[in-house]
Image (cartoon, rainbow, N blue to C red; front, side, top):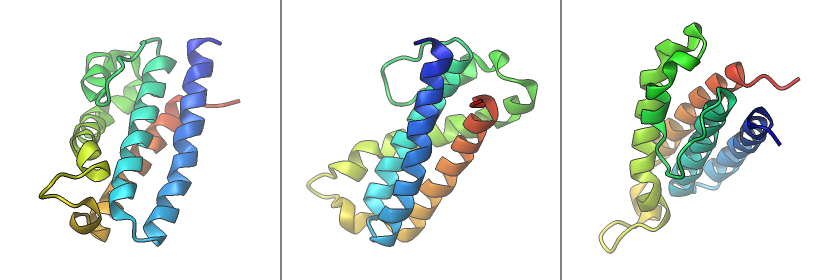
Length: 137
């Protein structure tokens, strides 16, 4: 398996997660939408990095790495880098709270439909950019 094949695999996994987000939204599982959106974004961004020959680190927010290597992206995609970074950072921050919560933060009570819709829209944006870069034959 090479880097491009692995990038395609990440893209496939991220794409399947988008459908899951809609199911979770229909179930009013808003915190789960946020958590799964973060995983989708992480997979898509790591796929983009692998596609351009960068081995991504084993942490969740790879937005800064995308920024460091934006010169490897097509010029038409570089304008989206700051938004990709912002989405990655924000969803990474929500990752644990959305899944585990805390003694004073109950995920099923704290996250709203609007939070879930924002996460879905952001995930779609990242996935769209990943699809533009990683074109499966």
